Amino acid sequence: MAEKSRPNILLITTDQQRFDTVPPYKPSFLRIPHIEHLAREGVRFDCAYSDCPLCVPSRVGIMTGKAVHNHKMSTNGKTTNVMGNADTLPAYLHECGYQTAAIGKMHFGPTRTKHGFDEMLLPDDYYQEIRNSGSLLQPMRNGLGQNDIAPGMSTVPEALTHTAWVAEKSREYIFRHKNNSKPFFLWTSFSKPHPPFDPPEPYYSMYKDSPIPAPVCGDWIEGNIPRAFERHAGRFAADIYTSSDELIRAARVAYYGLITQIDYNTGRILAAIRETGDGTLDNTFIIFTSDHGEFLGDHKTISKTFHHEVSTHVPFIMKPSKSWDRRLYQKHSSALVSHADILPTLIRAADGEVSDDIDGIDLCQLIEKNLPKRNYIDMISGDSIDSPLASIGISDGKWKYIWYPEGGNEQLFDLENDRYETKNLARKKSSQDKLKELKNELIKRHKNLSYGFVNKGKLVKTAVKNDQIDGNWKLYPWAPGYTTEYCEHDIKH
Image (tube, rainbow, N blue to C red):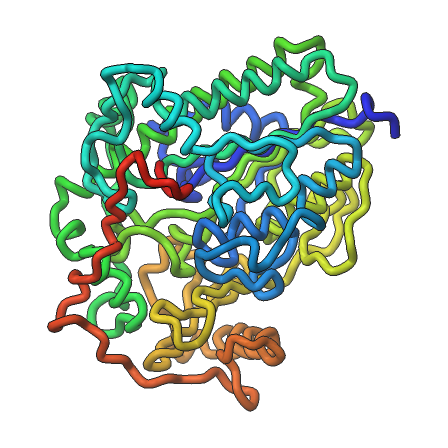
């Protein structure tokens, strides 16, 4: 295939965006016209999951096309430990004749590692640029931590926010390639709606009078809470946050505002593509997704990490190029999808070939040829059975089973009738057949893995740790994520 006949490729990711902020689950008041436009123009996948709901593991899945148990990055860490500059998404596309760029949060480690990209612009470039501009208005001066859900307003106007900067740099890249004979692959990576929840106006006040959904709480929170889940909530002082209805509502108002800000800035990127030439937007292959979700007060906790829907179920929209003979539009699918599917989908859209050791599937072929769907998707948190937040899970899209080795706690949820997992059915007699099915499948999948969750054909149970400091997990220092704009790491949002 000639280079010009290959579509430009735009991958848009957000950070910590819940599944229920896009159709068909979103509240009616939430304004996301550009994301909804992409969904109408393409395929909406309603059962997309992060198989390890943390920033780095999810991004490694995108880059390698591998499931977490194969790429081995099941916690945040140095990405150079699991991948280099070959056999990555940008490296494959470079071989296909593409010029490649990453703009926004990558969370690679070490920070400036390119992993096959030709160009990169990172959050630190934004903070240095605005700092060197001499502006009296500087971002991130509200004192909020990078994991702090107490909301606040941006200390810079909308046009000077990191979200707007990512969109503007993406537009500049697109215009710079207007007359280039080579197609481009651009990964636009927004760092919101990850905390701090500090949108600028008008987004800060946009939903203050809207019917904000209240947090949900599972029956398993009282009396049967998994130790790892309890430890996570304690470290984040979640009991303090979730005890205030006013604070959680304000956090959600700001969270929704950040999502709309991303959507409107996405409109600027789509406009730039359209303005570079006739039919250019039609001939651009676009995927929109997020790395993981956010509890946002549900189940009396915040952040992510665990395998409940609000943490691991993510938005996923694919808009293939209309120039294809096999155009796909106005479709939605219940197929189980993961971040690993992005690599083979985009490489084959570029008329390339991928290695046999990837786990992802070509989503275009899945829809076009009505290929068999995945029966299950399995999930891991923690790099070993002894990790303080260790858990594994499995879902068939209708049911989900989660195992916590510490204390041997297990959960079973009927997702069709209880999407927010408020009722743990693991001890219900009527649910034992489904529990046995999912449990046995999970054991089979972990039989030959090195994590240690399975031994002699059984899920391993470990003793409950007494690791609180003076009886209080809140004394752990990192949970709020205190960071200034001078921090060199790629964790500033």
